[in-house]
Length: 115
Image (cartoon, rainbow, N blue to C red):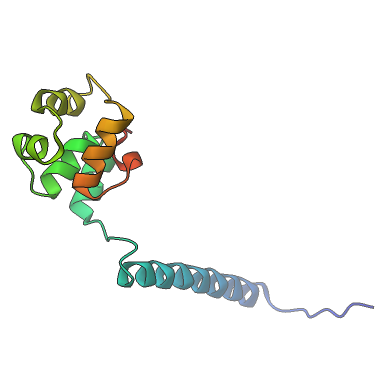
């Protein structure tokens, strides 16, 4: 035989909202722990907004990290003209090229993929 409890709908909804809040808090604490451990980096809203707005990820991350196109080319050995072409969406680059750029910008290759 199962036991049951009857509560007011408003109380049930309050308890559901508290459960949602608790799950969100747990997720936020997990992110904070990853950031504190150095496993994740918080992305400033201005960077996230530019990416969400569809700007070329390579350009957004390059500018955020303080590289000029020429500076990134020197740091990675990727020709500047390739960087220009990739930022304009005319070329996606090889996996090796993307890896060198991603490493220099301290992001994953996935972060450089256009939306």
